Length: 198
Ligand code: ATP
Ligand code: MG
Image (tube, rainbow, N blue to C red; front, side, top):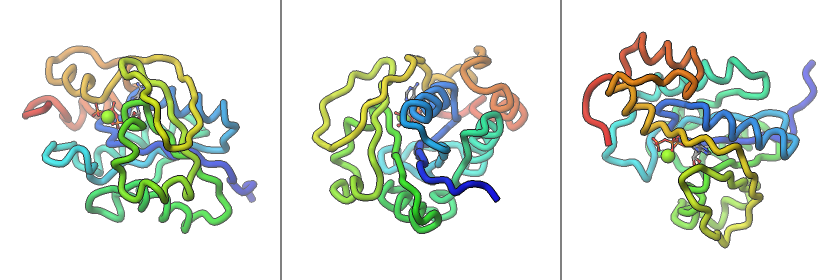
């Protein structure tokens, strides 16, 4: 039997699509904090992105699976997509703790998301459910947060899902910005090629 997993990172996001910036951040935090695993947890619908059409959850989930398949330290949790509705981190962490008793959770969030932590649902409770880990993000300055967190500096990769989507629409290359199976999946399913985007 596998040894019990005790220190688990959770990287929440829309992952529309997952890209190398996400994976490099997850990898660095995993090494720095000696985590056993990092879970990519795609949101069903993001409270800060209401009114914006993300790719369907099944596609975002599948792309996360393809990315996680390439690294033994990574796995995917569909907990937010299965719950449905608007995704709040307080629910993500409550459900994960219920599924994995005895696990210590580390919630990983980029500099841009960390800046808005006070606006998150049940912000006071979040710190009791997981240790928060802020990661540096190219193009985003770290604003001081009064929420306790660990700060991890990660290799600066100026990649965003927004830029990847724009590139696909403009028929510009995304190779090396997303894992190869993810690029193939986008092409095969015709994701991001047309339509309205920000
Ligand atoms: P979008 O442009 O659609 O908002 P995104 O690239 O910001 O996409 P998200 O799914 O919103 O990706 O991000 C999930 C988490 O990963 C957030 O905490 C975000 O700050 C972090 N993150 C995303 N890209 C990077 C990066 N290049 N370096 C460090 N952290 C990142
Ligand atoms: Mg974002």
